[in-house]
Every structure is written in structure tokens, then in C-alpha cells.
Picture 1: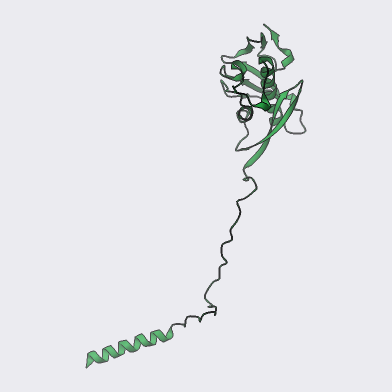
Picture 2 (picture 1 turned 135 degrees about the horizontal axis):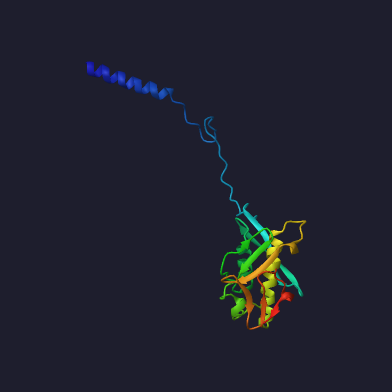
Length: 199
């Protein structure tokens, strides 16, 4: 008999507990507890550049003939090596450096490797837009392009980019010599194509 009373009490508790639960909302009826979340909208990929991407201009040409401008984007810190590599990537010329660029208050010193196009010539085949017809044209274009790009890249407006001197030298702190052209530039004077010494 006690078992029967116990079972009856248990059944009664279960029934009462079921009555205390709130009814599920009928179809079409919103539950006050439910939080409506709109479906995720399909978004197009962003069309703007990432916030840390910046733009800088490369200058390809010669002081005598003028320069064409080529904007490129980069991330992180702007360095002389980044600009020189940008010229190499754009033109296809090997602009390997023998040493990192040395920056000082008065300017920058650039040491091109003996493996660079300055000494080995243009790639074969050349890019049509940057086709060079002889070693002299190539050398003047490489040296003037690096000079102009570094000057414009590191002199803030309203400063005069020409005030940033660029020196060229070769490994071992030797003067830049181009034996195939019979030209040399002293290490103690800023680069100017016209200041070449005939050797």
C-alpha cells in the first residue's frame, strides 16, 4: 500500500511540474523569449586596399630623357631596398645589391652586385616597355631610375628631392666602373651621369 501511495505522489509531482512549464508558441506566434536574428547577408569581398597598404611611385627613365611614373603598393616600412626591388620587378632587370643601402644625413649609398644587369646586361627576352638598345642606355637608365626613385621616395614635400645625394660604389668600397663603356664614377662625389670619368 505504501508503494502505491509513493507511486501516486510521484505521478502527481510529475504532472504538476508539466503544468508549470510554459506552452510552446503556436505556429505563426512569436515567443517572447525568442531573439530574432536576421539571416547573414552575403557580402562581396572588400574592394578597398587593406589599411596597412600604402602607395609609392617608381620613376623609370633618364634625367636627360625624362621619367615615366609607376605607382606600386607595399606593406610595412618603406626602405631603399624595397624601391630598388620594385624597379627590378617592374622592368625585369636584375638589380641585386652587394650590400644593404647605407643611409646617412646627406644621402644614400648604393652598392650594386656584379650579378646585376648593370654588369651583365638586360634579360633575354626583354619586356617591350623597358627594352634597352645598348649597354649605355641600360646603364644610364638603371642609375638614373634608382637615383630619382630614392630621391622622390625619401624627400618629403616641400623639400627638393635633388638635395638627397645618391652615391654608387661596388664591393670593397670601390668606385663604380663599367669597363664595357669605359666609364667610372668616384666614390667621393654624388652620382650624376654627366660626371662620369672616362677610363
